[in-house]
Image (cartoon, rainbow, N blue to C red; front, side, top):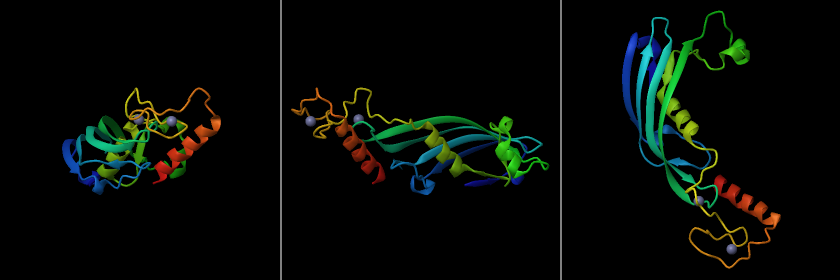
Length: 178
Ligand SMILES: [Zn+2]
Ligand SMILES: [Zn+2]
């Protein structure tokens, strides 16, 4: 859903929107969205067309444990605060890229708010870099590849051979690329 900023009234507009997992075109690692997503947002526009958005998104992402490679559901409930400013007429696109003091300000050129894009970005921001299914996840045996949360293998793990961690990394990468 795209909101035309020029048609938005000055003041606060409340938007509540559901997005189907398929409709969000989510593309990040090999994760996929497990269910529909709910967005609640207050969009405040002032007389200078400065936009302030305060809201939350809720849903579940199907992810993979980085330690044992098992899929699991990761619930997301993310609050956000986003400011969008119209590009000042005297500012060029070039200046926008370079201006360090403006890093925290999102200028918009097209007077439009893309809610889908905001949801996608907020989901990714909320996903930890290292995804672990449980804090005590024992991971995979680096010798036989068994999931040590589920089975106890007979491998002697006292002589960790660095070559096996390379194989494990490979296995992980293959999983990510599937
Ligand atoms: Zn795990
Ligand atoms: Zn083993």
